Image (cartoon, rainbow, N blue to C red; front, side, top):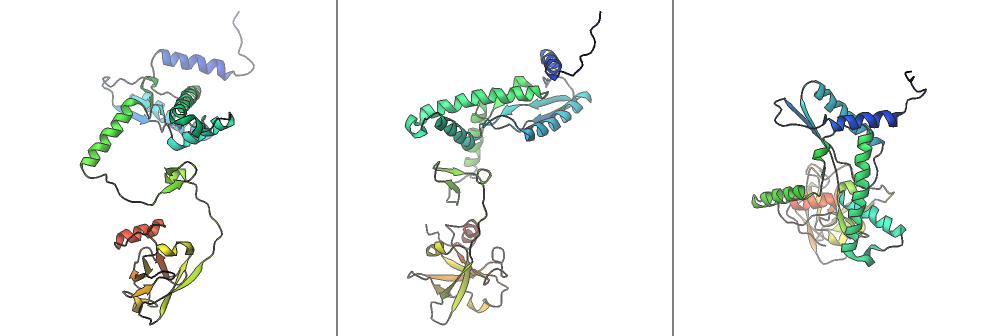
Amino acid sequence: MAEGLPPQYDPGTVERKWYAFWEEHQFFHADPASGKPPYSIVIPPPNITGILHLGHVLNNTIQDVLIRFKRMQGFETLWMPGTDHAGIATHVVVERMLAERGIDREEIGRDRFVEEVWKWREQYGRTIVRQLKELGCSCDWKRERFTMDEGLSRAVLTVFIALFEKKMIYRGNRIINWCPRCNTALSNEESVPRDEQGSLWRIRYPLADGSGGISIATTRPETMLGDVAVAVHPEDERHAHLVGKQVSLPLTDRSIPIITDAELVDRTFGTGAVKVTPAHDFNDFILGNKHDLPQIV
């Protein structure tokens, strides 16, 4: 006697059965020699900082729709899967995990810490792959990669050397995001900006020739000792007669020039005159390079 349909759909039983069938018959595997027109997607590799969230579910569902659609249209499709080491983000979560176990990263040393990171990668890398499979993602799992695989690392090094030899990569001073706790540089994506209520300070810089002065407006008076110029807008008539003159920097024995810049000076902000501190502000760094100003750190 035939069995009837179960009263409720059991996704675990049905989906695992058919996904295993798809994998067994290599329906997701791409054959570059098939002669079919190619269509490929490289998965934005999920970070191994933890398990997938709903954002990953949405993103990978869209990719799966595209790859399956093209597969049904007769394309030779490749959806390249992988995971991302995530650098400092993984460093932080592993350090936090060790702290919960009463282990200090500094005490165990670098080699032991790296071992713990690889253990973390093994655990969460497997979990992420399992989650993607349970979502039904039709990736070519024979081509799964990790961003720190030997081949990928060698490719990065090869390209870096090639760009260096073409003088497209060079060493220079830059203002960076710095984490004082981790003692490392952070990318803009790893730095979370926070707005704070501040004050706008006005400071009068006397002209070096004693004929007057100019008032600047700043939210960072504490960086004044690193000033190397005062900038005004070239079309600001209030300060036109001062351009090219020198001012005495308060609290120092240095004189600095009054310059113009139309891109980085907003004449409607404050007094229309700003101090330029290339070593302590991102915009000032750009302005300093543009006008060949020194950096005082």
